[in-house]
Length: 341
Image 1: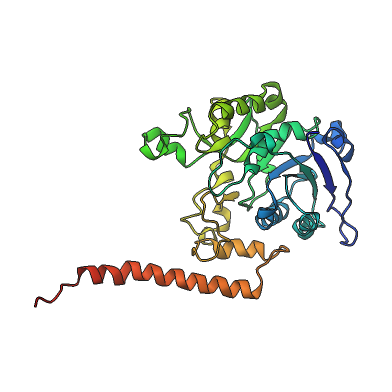
Image 2: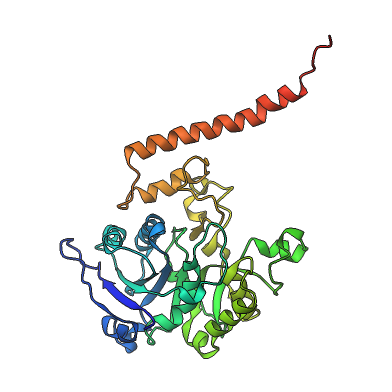
């Protein structure tokens, strides 16, 4: 069995009984979704994460649902491996009454056991390789999103993009410039024509299936199981010269140095992607976008408690003190001349 699907419908406008669940095999998932003739008009967005990322997932989905203004229904699929039902309900609760409906699809990660991951990612990253297999065949296009994002604009504009025969649409990764410049710190990353970030992907599912992309990516990973950026490397190799560049605003990756709140609203990116190991919800790192991120998080069921907020402030103060010590006190102590005897 490839997986199980659990459908949670949150399109009800009155709260109350808005959870409608049914567990069935992946082979029967079509029965919980619209007919193939109507699916092409719907908007399909896919996330893949486990319970450790429940809060970022809830925050990302809330931002997605609030920004969506399209006329078509928004179908959100969450691929998961370990995710308790009670936590799933906390994730989807804030978006009841929107155009979004949620479906949870279980995926077995055993086949990815031998593949490496970055220190701050889990093997759930490989789940996106199975999107075309797990989603109903009637769905021809899907937008995959990492969970460490915020959606600030209507993704309907992405779906209107013509792929013109490309397997997927994506945005170049920050590593691309380093690769082209021949930096030594990216020597383990495969050389391709243009290197894209796999956190935001507009996928032509029919073409993906036709060209057997999943099989080719898995073969690459079997040959290079320790590839530095895991499935992102493999996708870049397999899809080299077969992907289309989307507008860079749909995968803005410089949020580690630019304060999103200070960007005028009309100039803000469509999707903010927190690509580094330091995330804005991590306490004690003084992330430049921590307050901006929290303005979304506080409207989910995972808002920080008062003790946690106090702990975060203490950690932030400690961080600032350490930075000031390194910046001012230590240099003066090192440069201060010693008195001769």
